[in-house]
Image 1 (cartoon, rainbow, N blue to C red):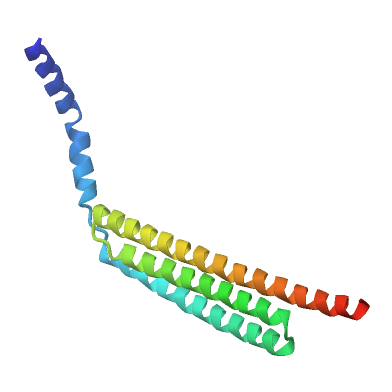
Image 2: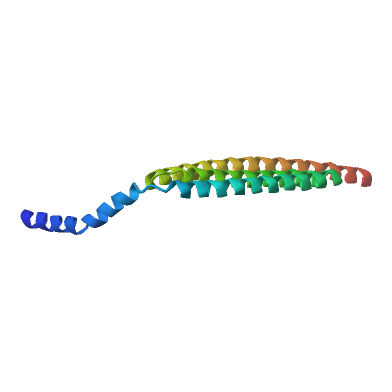
Length: 158
């Protein structure tokens, strides 16, 4: 039975040898330099456009911020933070493409992608924590303001 099992195993191994060989070659497949350079150039162009868009949105926010005060100032801060986060995400995305374009093998590309995903996850957690703290602060300040205003109204009617 052992000889029979070994024979079947060898037959299966031989049948899948071309697939195994092709997979091994695919892992070490090199990406042509021209393709990497093209992707890098496109990513750089997109980065410049994202920076221009970010600068334009900063100008719009500055105009809004100077035109209105009070609660709109907080909205402008929130808008500015959102714009900054979007810009950082776009920049990280294009930097990631640039890094991926530098990969010379499939294994290297998978490792780079894994590192990028992990880094973006850490950024997401950090932003979620900061947002929670900021919203908590706003709610506390809003409640305090409402309480003060209610006290003023109650004091006048009593």
